[in-house]
Image (cartoon, rainbow, N blue to C red):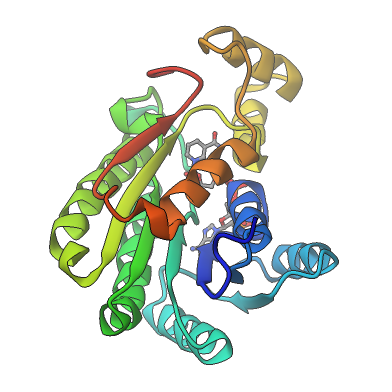
Length: 253
Ligand code: NAP
């Protein structure tokens, strides 16, 4: 089961959570994987752990909101592996607050990481993908794109990612590049742990209460999203383009 051997993937926000799981699954399928994250310590921990499985990996520290760092990271990955075939735009943050209390900094920070970061990385990736007439761009949106209390900034960014995905799919399809999005529901990661902490609920209780609202009656795990990432990344998925796949244990949360 090495359906991605010979392919190179770049995963942003790869040091933990969904990004780490996606990187691991892509590597397990035979892809060379560039782990990109701004958290150098977390990145090294993740790289050391995954390297133990014998995967072909590269780690690059970069902030997706910094164009120079993004371009340099993609150049390093391309020179190391020879190609850039798959991009997973996963890096993300939350700065939740009710709208009347949301600061301009909360707004700008979230939109910058999710939207500008996705813009910079996709533009860097398409430079390589158009030349090789092949590419897979997979953007991580969220069920919050449909609206979520306390997340005016995040919901806007995640809805924006869906529009961005469909537009790139239209523009880049002719070059053999597909662009799709995954909209996860509640996934157990540091991000949802931070939410539980902010609202003063123990994480286990938080996860149980969220699972009760999900049709499959469980919370999501990073591997649930990694599974969908691999589907979009496969060469065989070439006719799947411009789609948003909700991976949320039901049609919505
Ligand atoms: P996570 O555990 O917080 O991991 C996010 C990673 O992204 C962290 O390693 C973080 O580094 C990195 N990152 C943040 N800003 C960055 C930047 N500017 N440049 C490079 N790396 C950066 O989050 P997660 O839950 O795995 O979420 C991954 C993606 O899924 C995000 O886009 C998130 O919005 C989306 N999502 C998550 C859920 C969920 O329930 N967990 C649901 C829907 C969508 P630091 O440690 O330095 O912050």
